[in-house]
View 1 (cartoon, rainbow, N blue to C red):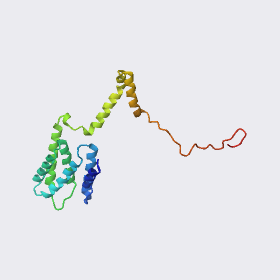
View 2 (cartoon, rainbow, N blue to C red):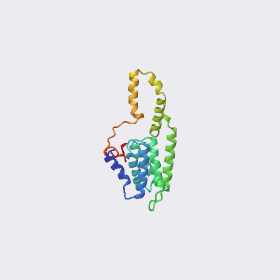
View 3 (cartoon, rainbow, N blue to C red):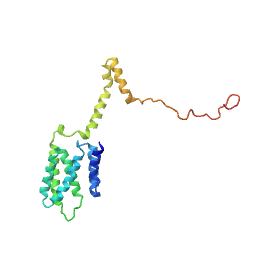
View 4 (tube, helix red, strand yellow):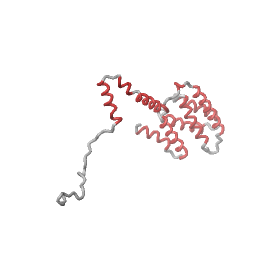
Length: 200
């Protein structure tokens, strides 16, 4: 990740609002851990926009939620990603206090939208569901199976090909041998004596 991209992400959780910073930081950590967005800034941007929209249209909560959903559509994110963002927005609104504002209607609408998105995600066929979270596990299983079949695979190769494959695999099995250079010389042995009893 480039320095400019890191700075852009940091700008979301280095504000004067410590409460907001905590949520934004926790969210970006989850995004980076799951790798569920091509651009990690996208969910943060939507998260930030949602609060702006709800603050501006606090008197018309239904319109606020519709405007926020329209923003998520502009970003061309899939249903799973949209659910992720909606869950974070609901979490923030649910556990935040807004001065002289009743957020119950917005919470109810957000909860309703989140439940609707969950139903949509569950209807997705398995092959349409994102693999990001389990790709590493899938690759590990695949590699394990291939390693178990390696003797059979090698048996069918020509001797020179087999040797070539083994040479490529050796660095992953045996530690690399490096020359050791002593900076202080050989260690001295105490009380080295000759047969005649003199030290040498």
